[in-house]
Image (cartoon, rainbow, N blue to C red; front, side):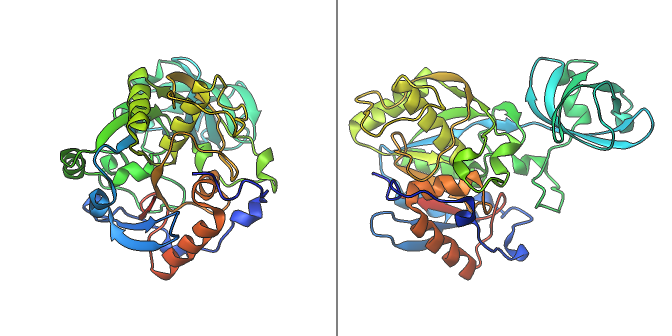
Length: 366
């Protein structure tokens, strides 16, 4: 489907909206698949109200669901400077076994400053700031390989708009998570239960997996008024040859590729660019067609930023949550469904008291 906004340039303010704070979900629905699901039809422009457990009704035998199997790491590290001041290190991206790019909160945290971690665990790890990367970003070196102590010292991070602690940290992981590396969950995947996955498979749906390690930048509001000037930080992606084969075979059979979450959308559209011989950040002219090969295998960094006007090559439908104002994710779903239709859907969601953001309800866009 061609995108309806291809000739339109939007400002970041065009993606703003007012959301009363009480609409921000503070706790997840139990069981997972009892969250509400708005169903948005791009052709008829109709909006329906259902639940996640109704998902099999809207899919067809042979459809391929593409899920992100990343796993959230305990990225939040409380610590103290040698002078005693409190510090928090938020891991973002590994640079080596002992060195990470991180957000560091505290005062006078310049290169050379040392931070003690693990006071409450009885184990001491030293973190040394080695470079100032601008704003709160720092390059941090640790006294021992991170994988040896992270589970003991670190805490699972929740988004800043969630103010209640989880009694079970696994509730911020998908049931199919495998590979650690994200600092935020691929939230559309949080709605799935083992029973729902089994039901989908029994009805003839297929599954493929990508691994895209979600960065904190994905959820940050866009600060510049021209979104084309926004710098999208890169995220690590593994799109296997087997997943590429499944996607390509599905397209050849005439079945649909259903992305579960915006991270799966970005993974699929990155792999579609690779199939065209482009890099993830290269513009892809609409007249270029993939032919039989919709996607190609890719392992590396992707900084793909999807705005209205993007020509989707590998996604036919998506399941996604309701997103923050002025965010890259709201821009992505507006690119897929059309900005006017998304505005209508969000207004309806507020009127119908849907729950928003990470622990909120979902939208299926067909």
